[in-house]
Length: 44
Figure (cartoon, helix red, strand yellow):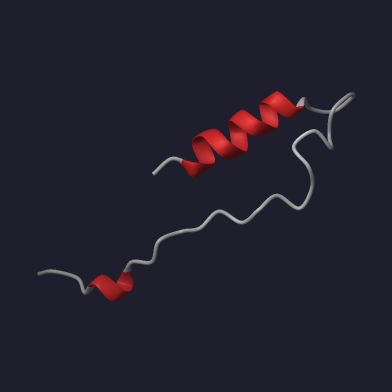
């Protein structure tokens, strides 16, 4: 049984609602946000 291609939609990662470095000290560095968001979240 094959599934119709219309069941599969490519996921698009929305833009961050803040800048990469917006949470820098004391919370999380821009480098960590960049790796997390632009790295594994965009993995295909």
